[in-house]
Length: 344
Ligand SMILES: *Cc1c(COP(=O)(O)O)cnc(C)c1O
Image (cartoon, rainbow, N blue to C red; front, side, top):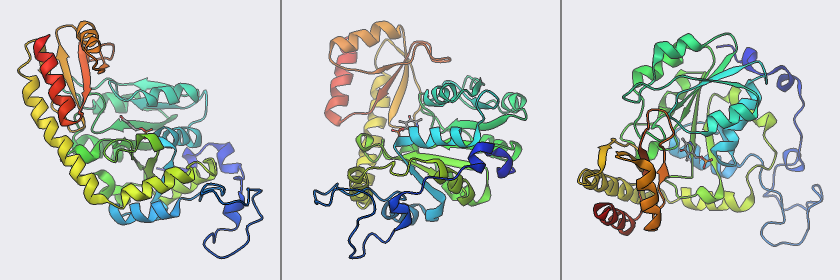
């Protein structure tokens, strides 16, 4: 892979915005800050946030055994995914490959950025069809999006598939690990140094319980991070979000406990769902949700709504006919769900 050839020409040529906080970075020093036109009256958030979110990156680097210069943080995964489109994909010329049924944002971001989205359906057991994917690649294919564990199917992709794509595709392989904390498989982060074309995204929205603060994480080679830093909005993560992230990240034990609770609830739910007479299939799950196939998804969706339970109707997704996706809730919520399902 030649990174220089992947970057859009305007991005290569542009000068990034240099914020006040970029130019004078030693924020801990006892100085009088008159450089950013902020209000001088302390209220906890009167100063601009650290544009590089150094404190959070140090914690993540330590916990994930990566270098801080391999990390980019964004306002949710949405932002880091959008940034890679903007950095590498030339509108109305380039294309990306996505593998439905999968997370809808890849396709939305492709559309938004005027990038062709070449869809290659997963196999019937929800694995990437490697040959068909590689057939779709041409000189303008910049990225392949892999979501593993995949949303909404819940399974992870085989190691062989991922390696084959990393080794045979000259562009970037984007591996979305939003649900990795619920999986028995280890993250591909340990392979980051082996594959210069690997981008891994994770999020604080699921296992970390911080969907509300919007924090997505992208891990990649430092050269890729440098390009993305050049185009990201300078203050993309606000002070309150950064504080909350630090607070939660520093209590790894609590996250582990909660994740294990969810995994236990999932095992229990997987068993009980099999006992519901209109459920035709319960798919295995390495995430914090379960995909089920029912007799009639629209009917069952509406029946659940009437009982006060909102699930995700995936009926209109390819390979997901009559499928509902159910997030794992609290033990009480899951018990309520099962009791309702058994009465329908
Ligand atoms: C939930 C989810 C995310 C998280 O997105 P955020 O913008 O970080 O909240 C990312 N990828 C997938 C596949 C998801 O299901």
